[in-house]
Length: 218
Length: 212
Image 1 (spheres, chains in turn cyan, purple):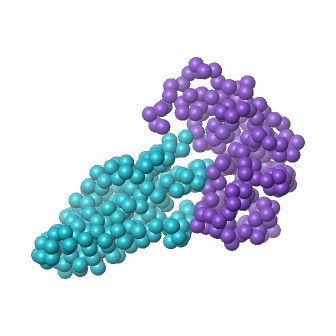
Image 2 (image 1 turned 180 degrees about the vertical axis):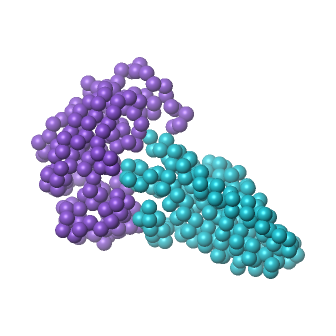
Image 3 (image 1 turned 45 degrees about the vertical axis):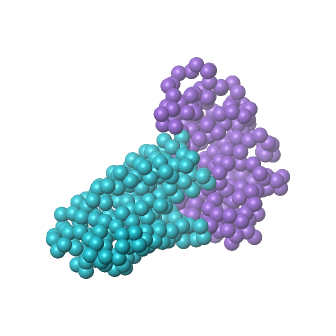
């Protein structure tokens, strides 16, 4: 499993791997918002938590369809399915690799972009923590969606339609934690629910993903 | 080493082959013959466990099967050596001894890939990719091989390389193989014509079209 993780990370940083695409997208979306709503710092700082969370969600979505599609096309997925690696492990590794290449950079970049949106100073730490807790769930749910649409022609759009509704709870609690942090309220409840969602997806979705992959490989 | 009894193979829920039975012992090769569409690929995928079979049994030592198809699973952004090392690693052959048959260098020279070892997978020609795909079988140390048209896009010399490797490095070390092919590999091997096993058109089993 470590070998697969290493290979996926290496592929991501090599030419054409798409590493940084999500990050650049995140950057551009967040920079575009002040152009759209105007330069009033008060308004910006109020909508900043929501914008940052929605933008990171969309950025994570951007690279989802690559998770299994490339391996499916060149036959690696069938070979992995016949290898001693359990498919559940493959699903887990794929989600982890996706998180390391998109979720983690997003989390690290978010505070800098929060500054652009004049996010309240008290909220930075909660922004970081909520993204750290929430983005793994985005990758895991996305991996499940990618497994559902693997092998479909133009599955990318269908994938977005399937996955975005499933992102709603993560978005609600993630943005809520940051907003409460910005207002000086206690965000523990929202953060705990966020962590719970992530733990739940990692406990259940690898099995669902593996089952779906087996059906799609038939 | 490989026992197949009364196996039914289905594609998309529709049975294509029924009651297939054969045995392959260690050191033997079985060549599958039959016209296009008879179900050679389906049979091999069923044997490899990629497809469920409605009926029958397949037995071989656990974790000893390997499957190779038209798609080689080669990553364009990895070098030849990295591609092979990855598959060896996934199959738990992390550090093949340099002197063993599975040693990377030995396998590379068996398939005439030694000079290409630092080239990116994406820059290989179709035949070179195929050789790399077959070299994968050399590093993963599996005993039971299911090969679907292994010689597609290989020239005569490479076909001979492959047949030599199969005979000298695989079969003589107690391996066996089931190969679907249309050409003569130059191996003295029994052939199995699949035409008599063709499933009757009305053979049971509902379609699982909903999953396709």
